[in-house]
Length: 110
Image (tube, rainbow, N blue to C red; front, side, top):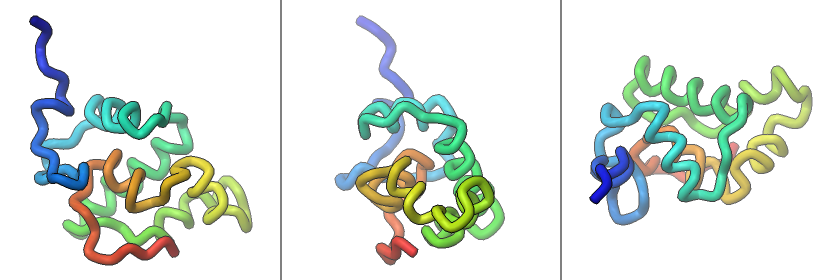
């Protein structure tokens, strides 16, 4: 019998969000992304690391518009579009789950 993956060991709520964001690490993000059908690229990591840094500083999930600004630097005028290309089911539904956030109280997409 093989060892359980980190995703199997981490406490995930009924909607697929991490119960304790402190349990998150990059290996878990890769596993969570696979469940979402996403292979993480450098741009995914740019957003995810921004989200984790924001969480570390503020203890809340960054609003989508703040994460989109990170993509604006690479794709002027296309941050929102690029966010949905990276996370086609949305910031809350995919980016927040992969970045190990609790389910945000608001569902803003920017």
